[in-house]
Image 1 (spheres, rainbow, N blue to C red):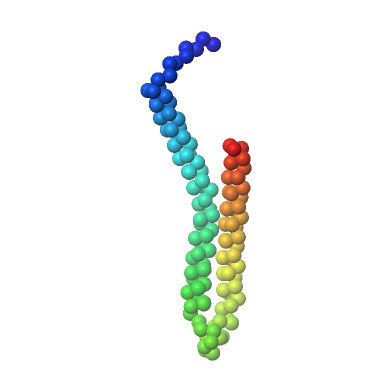
Image 2: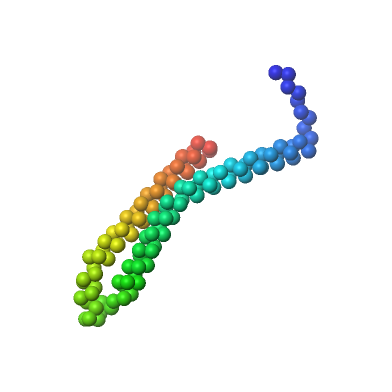
Length: 115
């Protein structure tokens, strides 16, 4: 237990602060990579929902005019098919919201442990 006590100087304090800052940046980089891994599946679900929604909007809602008698048959005929797409979109969005909620809960627990 005979450790020599290092004399505190501005140089060694600065050096230790720089080392601490580098380690802090490394921890933040690692956390950012881990967060990106957690966010990617959520982003993917939302991208899929957006693509389906764009198709649904362009190919159904913008394509037909509900006030046009000629479009009424097509609107009714394609309704069931498009209802399925709407359900799929809903599933993607609900899954993404759940995963975001889980991620927020993990972040809250991590803050409680640190705080």
